[in-house]
Image (cartoon, rainbow, N blue to C red):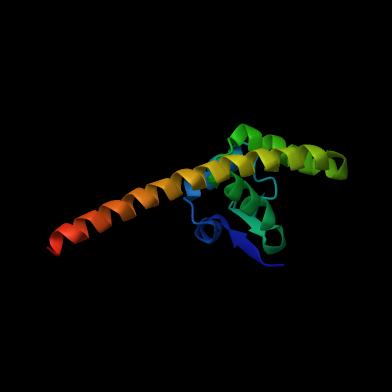
Length: 121
């Protein structure tokens, strides 16, 4: 089993080590272990756990809600309905963000076109 230490994990997840330490202190990365030198590591087979946390965080989910989601995972299949509802709510949030970004892109494209026409006169 390959160990992935915190600095490597930070690179894989594209976040700062300090963020991982904070998430660990909040109980969000329960699969982190410590070696004999007290360095944090995770087994390669457990990478899905921190990836889930980071993905949910990037969607805008609060750490409190992520913790709640992870607690539901620990409950197993009895919590599938609750997890599904949380994911639906987060999907709605992300789709609204996407809509906002699309409107921003359209505005930028409009302005680019306008300025290009004026430059080419």
